[in-house]
Image (tube, rainbow, N blue to C red):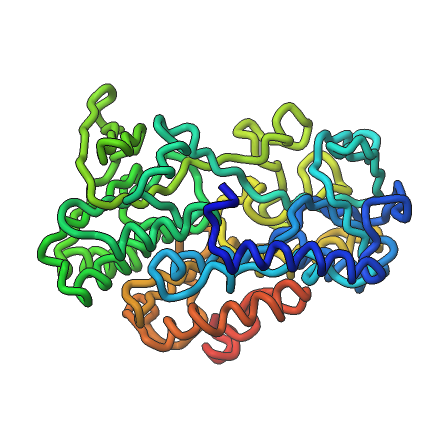
Length: 444
């Protein structure tokens, strides 16, 4: 698949290799120089892992922190919505992993192969055994295109894309800009996913693009979601339904994609309310959101819950069985939407939790489930959804955020990426909580 990637991205990957070499004096590699024991071991080099490595470095010193991550490139994935709509480049979303790992922190370039929490040890796929005093699990989740019949091989055909993978996000834009006439399909799977608003964001952007290019009258836009609702928080769902009606978009609830016949441009959906009933849709374009699940390496370990997710206390992010194990982000069973905004808020709480544990004290800061989803509704408007564990709006700004806003779009497209690279990944951004209090004059 690498040969199909954007030339800029391939160039950036070559740059990553060079960057890793010239920065070998900054990051201890997984070779002879690395140790076998660390005070804090972080698993995963995504947003949660990098943020916590930066925070732990300040707590216990760089030489006492290691991070296990096999990928050479770190991606700011929220921007892929705009890449799929043609307004951002895929190359702009990635940076060398070596450039985001905190200086002095050991980078073990391997995959996690096995947990042994009874002995405070992790095994990697390279055969290395690493022990720890404290473990932070930030392994994200896994995409399962293969659970849809006809995928991932169907991506070899045109007119199909997915904003959830760097390998397929540009295919979304190719399908959209080459749209001629017919059905434009957008899907939401029957599993938990990360950024639950993204499957419909690309629908709104596609609608806007087709209107701008004079093709909208030839398009039948269809959003088939496995969910029983358009969005999980009623305030924002009501606003989105108004947009759906105004723009003549077709939404089918409880419809789950089970097969793609890319050679015939057909998609098969099951009706979740009528088991056994299926329906075939022809398409001129389809955006696929894949089923997702917990990291496979958690399966069979004593760290998982009954569904396979990391089993943590939803208030403190401490593991429910092992007091020296913690979790953050998509790999956890926290009952909130899996977003980068949630990771930011969780990082501040986890930072405090670990600080208290290091001092043999009881955790005293609690995570309220804060998460955010900038629902992009056009090329210049956003509905900024913010809410907590209970699905109650937890808005930062003293305005009605269920209204489409140009300012919020600017935040999504331009401000949030900067905040991600220079705030969250540096361990300096823990979410908008303090600012929310100021904005609402202490009333929230």
